[in-house]
Image (cartoon, rainbow, N blue to C red; front, side, top):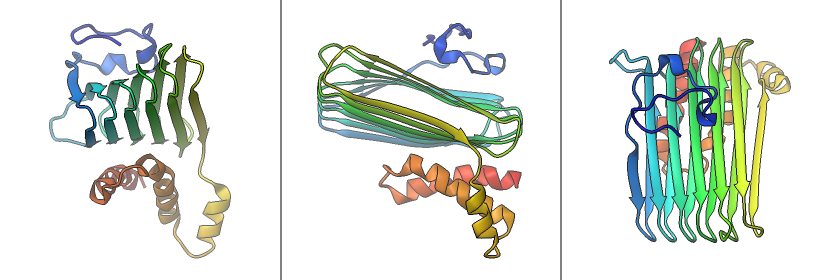
Length: 250
């Protein structure tokens, strides 16, 4: 991953699908240390702002102490190019949870890029990302999991699903696992599809207008990303940021 001040190229795997032509300077990494046994939770929504900027990049480098927990939940719903980049190193028995949503249309690119390093035994990680796009919009998830040789009993998972509401939209998922320990559980899944026609017909037959049907189906789809978030107010805020973007398109 490129350091601050050094502009990347698409030869860098982590920037393969990025809108580099819309990128200004790279921000510094924000360094975070979660002490042993403690929990850090960060929730954010990148929404339409008044500053007129075409791009926004956030970069977090997190060290999670023994038995500690780091949770990051976010919605990316604005900018021509928006990127959230997270690098996490897990100590023994630590946990990392990511729930992310990208949503939008026009000719935009919105992406989550993660690099999770299981550096000690008994650590766990779970990443759930949902992308909903239309027009020429693109949603990306590039997730790299490294399990070092002595990090036995690792349990790591990635789950990505993309929903394309119109022709011309696209999503990209690039899961990468490098596993050097032999007693681990590591899984990843990636699917891309359209709205369920049967569900649309069923709901329309009961008098719901098409806009409401689409909104309800999208809400159910992206809700998976926030299942692990036990703060109802924050969950509603992140969901509202995504649905407001959808409503502006309907």
